[in-house]
Amino acid sequence: DKVLLHLEARFRKEIKEGKRSAIRKVLNRDVSSKKMMILCIARIFKRRAPQDDQRTLISKTVYSLELTDGWYSVLAKPDHFLSSKIDEGLLCEGGKLLVSNSDLCGSEDGIDPLDECYDASPGNNVPILYIYANGTRLAHWRAKLGFTIATDCNVSWSHSLALRRIEHIVAGGGNVPCIDLRVLEKQDLQYLEAGTDHGRPRRVISEEEEIDRRCLFEKKQVTLVERYQSEIEAECVKEVDDDAPDLWRRHVMKYGDLEACNLTLEERNKLEAFTQKRQEILRRRVREEIEAKLEEHDLVFQPSKPFLRVLVGNRNHESGDTSAYVTIWEPTKEQLDKIHPGRIIRMGNLGVKDNKFQGLLQLSANSRTPM
Image (tube, rainbow, N blue to C red):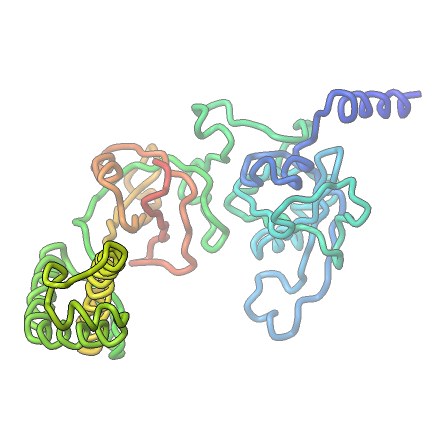
């Protein structure tokens, strides 16, 4: 009787009322897979890692998971850190996971779990949900499956997992969905020099050095353009006029302008139209030739990439606590105005590098990083 009641309730919700579960909405591509949700581990699939990969992997077994929201399932791929936790027995079938900032790959136009071809197990051509250590936590066994929200955040951050401390960040464990950081030190804006074709390593330069580099480059460009401008214009005029219509060559090239020509109204309209088109072609050809000449002399300006490096600590930072560096690439003016020593800033979707800088964890952001 209970089974029939559950089936009836399921039919009423899904068919009559048109409600969909979390996984079905994600698979339909109607809701982002990055939203925070609680899923249950229905099955764990494993296979031995290839011999060549075993030296670089934390776990020597490659795992796949079937995660369910109680209604439907999705095939999931844990990262190396989470795979090691399966080896340790911390993640097992029947356990619940709080998943945030995951990536769904495959079936870009969406797929429905009710499709005949859909089967959430390895070896099938189905979407895979990639889950990462920094966006995954064990959930309480009584936690309700499906989408969930953080109650201690405002609305804009409520669908992201908030990490409490820098120590909880796993290097190489995917992006950090959300974390509160205290600004300890703000360095001056710096620039990563644009790459060159001469094998010279790129330098990190100051803002003043970048301004000087731009000015020197512009002077070299102006000098080269002045040197070749007349020659290029003459070549382009000859090239365009050689392809001019017969009417142009007979009248304008002979008499110099339209006023001196004895033309019918139709011929005058045609020549006026070609005159306007000729000017546009000449401007485009001269610009292309100048750009080619600049490229030939290696004078095409490549702007350096600005970045701001900030030393941060935990929200309630104390002496001896773990610190980290946040590098913000191409920061906006709004971001620069927000960052001051002593201020607490909430950042979302921070990248995490595998290697450290000066012995500290490296986090990365850009102009689109929410703060």
